[in-house]
Image 1 (cartoon, helix red, strand yellow):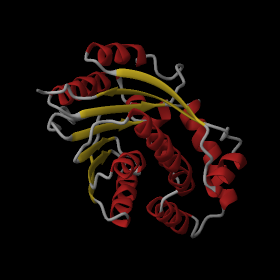
Image 2 (spheres, one colour; image 1 turned 180 degrees about the vertical axis):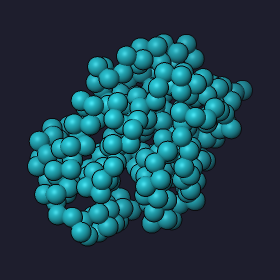
Image 3 (spheres, one colour; image 1 turned 90 degrees about the vertical axis):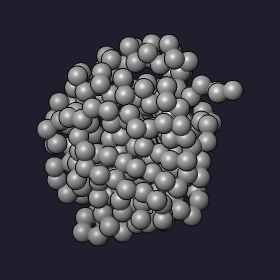
Image 4 (cartoon, one colour; image 1 turned 120 degrees about the horizontal axis):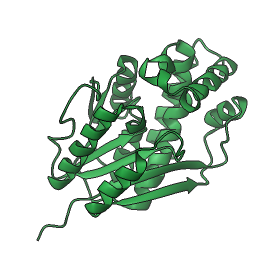
Length: 254
């Protein structure tokens, strides 16, 4: 790993293990994983990040996982160069950081409905000395979230669409495709599980109509020691990183 990634991971450990043990975080991670897999309706109610332990588990485990998955996807897809990244549903900022770090982009804007996640994203931007700012915004309540994104912007929605209701999801799809038509590069990343995403086929078709692509990914990437220990202790399968993605790059202009 590069020095900046190591610095980010070390900062996460310093802050989130200051008053919690690794075993306590692993127990919280088991509960958090159950919330994501078995009780997704609770995500909308905010249960996923309702306790200090769950927040630490998300920051220390799922954040880095999202970082490494996004990094591998961006490396594999080789998107066009961008001068700025707009991270919709940015969470702790991990996926946006991965796109930025992989392509050398320094300007990033994030938005998320959870105030703690926004603080985490801004802490990461400061640590890595990016021109970055995350703000609290609820994608279920706003229209045109990506409408201002145009040529030279990378618009990212990672692990977010599946948490939206149908109305907000349809609205976001329109926004993303509008941004792409305006010259933005659009990337959507979600877990592979089809059980929790019956909307995926319609999105694949919509992206395909505009020259986009859909992929499923499996990366045999070793996790750093802390994330490996947490995953093993929580009974999670850490043998490979998996995700699926939708990508639509701007049309080449003559």
